[in-house]
Image (cartoon, rainbow, N blue to C red):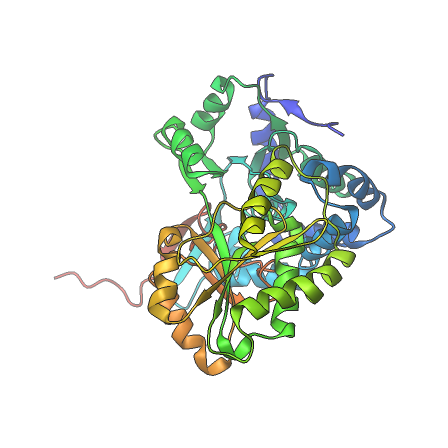
Length: 431
């Protein structure tokens, strides 16, 4: 379903988008928050026609099963409530009414916060979660948004915009969804004309896009990122394995928050190899029955089969019909990420773990940690020098709070501009 999608090579009426953006900025943020909450309510409603269309059309685009997509939508829109979105704005700017007008920031200053007039968002297709959050941030910043849909995946953004349009046609006018032809000239022109460009993709993609921004265009890039899980020796158990399996199976392990591997500490009542066998014998089959895998995306089935062959030859393969667990004692960073393919790697000391994580130190995004409370500081201190921006318990890796700092930066604060007015405490003294 590509209804509503324009090819960026076709003319885009930027003036119309700018007028819609200006109109959006005149609206009260409280009303916008209420509207977004209504959008979330519709997507959470199993009987809503939009959700029915999504469950029919999106599994093919994202390579998910209907059950997997249904679970993902619950996670995405569960936080789209009026209270949680308002709390997000309080966290980001203190007083949400700063987005409406000059208002008190503290006892001495007043301020006004404005989002870009035109913001181009170049989105990646790893999961619908990152797309939804990007659109949410743009709406709350009262920005006119041009959303570049990932190749072959326009339907989710179109359905999201359609939901907004059915609830508030005026707000929908400030959102354009599109693709572009293989010639990027038209995209580069939009980048030059936009006030802000937000791009998600590989490091190579981010590096290629950045130089095409105009001298006054703000560029915010989110490049390659990986996530892992760590299980302390005291925490290696069936409960930890179940939490880990849900983290891995959600979005079929394709998202940037999906654990690429799990590092299990030696010396516990359950050895790392026993943990891998527990995952394969009991846990993964149970979770897979609730979240079956979707159709592989191009090239994935061949890559999984090849990797299974390597580990099967070594006797380190545990697999089902649509999931794989391997046990790998090599003290190196695991191979490339594959869907529903979880590698268990043992470690004996913190230094050994640091050494194994080192190749990904600059791309580490999230760590799901299974450890007793008294050891959290130990693991967090070890991880702090890396690029990791989120450390969370196992089982919630795919449920980041709305205000989480993606790649160590607030997506919202990265795109808004502040104007502050400093109130004098007393009349100036002239000497």
